[in-house]
Length: 362
Image (cartoon, rainbow, N blue to C red; front, top):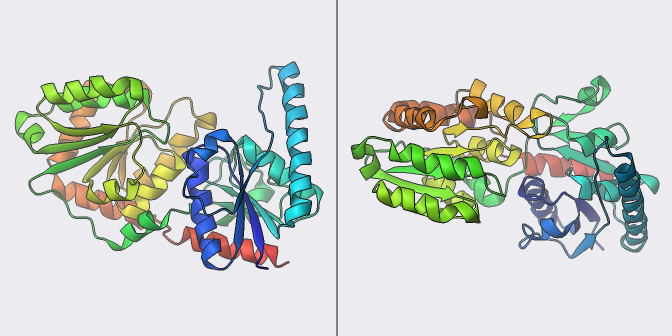
């Protein structure tokens, strides 16, 4: 029988997509994969190459709520016992965690049985679950060359591998960026769960662009369901060709044709922009834990690949000005594309798979 890896990830695209990319790399090497996640994770795991999915009990609570913390602890303990029982049956060679509270019981279960363990941090700031586990696991991998909130000892032994991306996105690294000539194609994302601010503000900003530019523009916008109809109406009134949907499954296809991307600065977004070599305007989520999106965006900004607009400074006029300045300057867009690509780590999935195999072989 081939070796088996348990891959544990929280229930968002930001956790699941890198976990899927690693799992595909391991599967190509002959590994078997089991996925541990929660109900939300199932929404993004329809193509996950796992022979089985484990639903482990998990919960979180605020530190200011002691009763809630006790209840959450009991739920996590239940999840750990579930993981231990499953691992006795499956006998995994390694347990790999990608953060998020659904990953916690799987990692604790593996640690309690003395199994090799790896965690991967997708953001430039070490997340709370990974922060709790980092000093306990066998190996620590991370996406960014900086790792805020990590103790010095963890930083010293962390392996910078980048963020694994799915093969269709990886393929974009080999395709050169072609700056706009006639049509201008704008891709607006908001993370895997959409962003209300961008859903409502971007159409209004586009409507303020010069008429000649609007006539050349095609907008592909990811919007929250409750904002979709208003976004379409605003674009129609501005005479702008648009495609508005709550979620784009073929993100590689949309990235390939985009001349400029506007979005949040989650880890997956920043990674995919770098690998695809696409210029962007990034709006870090203000309420993101430990302000990690601002740290994520800094890598692309310092490389010249992105313009960053903080929420407190963001207005319709400010966004319209930023869009106009970039869309009318194809030479600048091309330079930004080169800047984004300069910090890409396109082989992150393979590099992380190498680390996982080395860890499992100990």
